[in-house]
Image 1: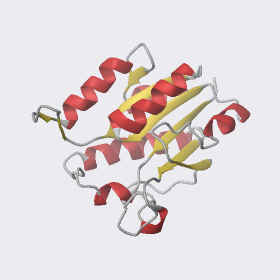
Image 2: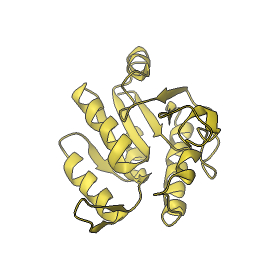
Image 3: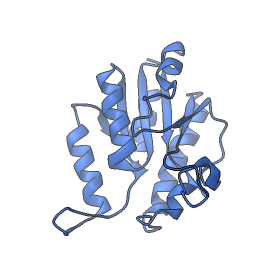
Length: 185
């Protein structure tokens, strides 16, 4: 089954967001870059998706006017098979990605990027509901600590664990970079 790698929202905008943390960034970038390299070596299309929303002002890091909607420093340089800019959480809403995937006969998506529980999880659920098989590569997703509504902290590791739990066998196969790449062989 033809596959495509989605690299979702791996952009400089996050460095300018209050929740951003460098703590998990090196491990994430190592996994993300290995996944990209493995897909490129196997001639699997790598699709870049950027997120842009909010007011088009210089002080909004997710606006195109800010100059931050560009690849995150440390991400391997790659020639994207296609690039889409989304304005919603799911990369499949209003971007043309669904049409592109269908035209290219893609039946399986490999999901990676930033933020695990937001755009990566939402895109995974949406893609599964539309009929794609999805590999969710948790180690190639990144998120940041949050504060729960009751004021208690919620660690990035707990968020990733929760996301894997709710997606597993319902919306996606949860896998490592190695497992995702082995599936391509």
